[in-house]
Image 1 (cartoon, helix red, strand yellow):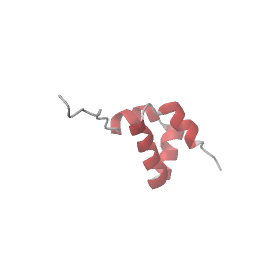
Image 2 (spheres, rainbow, N blue to C red; image 1 turned 45 degrees about the vertical axis):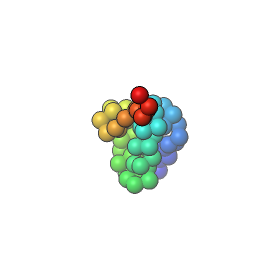
Image 3 (tube, one colour; image 1 turned 135 degrees about the vertical axis):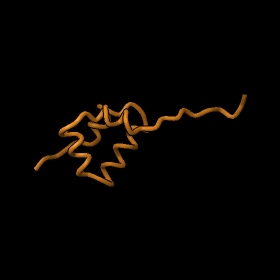
Image 4 (cartoon, rainbow, N blue to C red; image 1 turned 90 degrees about the vertical axis):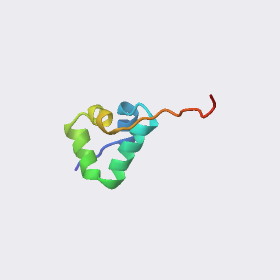
Length: 61
């Protein structure tokens, strides 16, 4: 049996709320994929591939 400290992982690899959201989605919706990503992969590379970051644009010109 293994245990993954999800908070520590997010603090280490997620640079913004969008990446944190993506990790949260995996934790709750596909925990097996999350565990495989953390144990076998490069979570930073995954996050850069799947995270859509759109900065807020002011409507005032």
